Length: 170
Image 1 (spheres, helix red, strand yellow):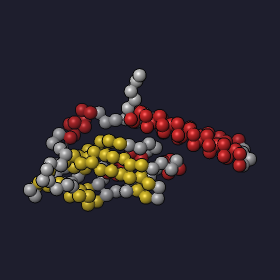
Image 2 (cartoon, rainbow, N blue to C red; image 1 turned 90 degrees about the horizontal axis):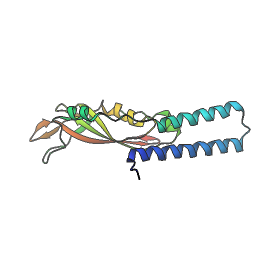
Image 3 (cartoon, rainbow, N blue to C red; image 1 turned 180 degrees about the vertical axis):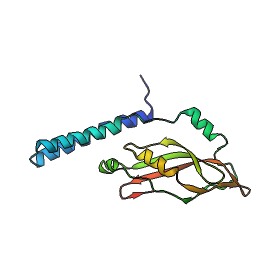
Image 4 (cartoon, rainbow, N blue to C red; image 1 turned 90 degrees about the vertical axis):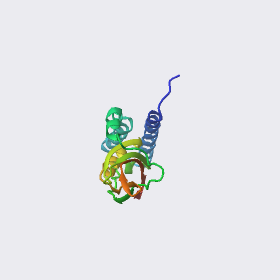
């Protein structure tokens, strides 16, 4: 018996759900409306696009690169104040994800330097259809009041969550 990673299982489940939605949408459209060949082609193209995004492999950061960038960035030590976000950029909710009504969270591990800049981002939990990439792009532009210990700024590794909900991103 082979063991699948949670990311692989999520991708498989996503592909199955995308197929089910596409089949259901196709059935509803065909049963409710007279369908011309062009609209059928459009539906097939949309299904192919969804499946392409759901089943496309995602690139993980190279462990050696992350390890080098993370040198000196440790989790918040006891007695330290946590970094506080002072400027953020809202992540994009991709049109494809919005149309598919995809919601969820992206969890990112960031390296925040002594000036409060995000200098590295690793994905701990992602979402499909471009939402992970949009979250990473946005978080790289965030600015923090740096973490401190005894009043002195310190570099830290800090997890942030980007919540994608239809009608709201946070």
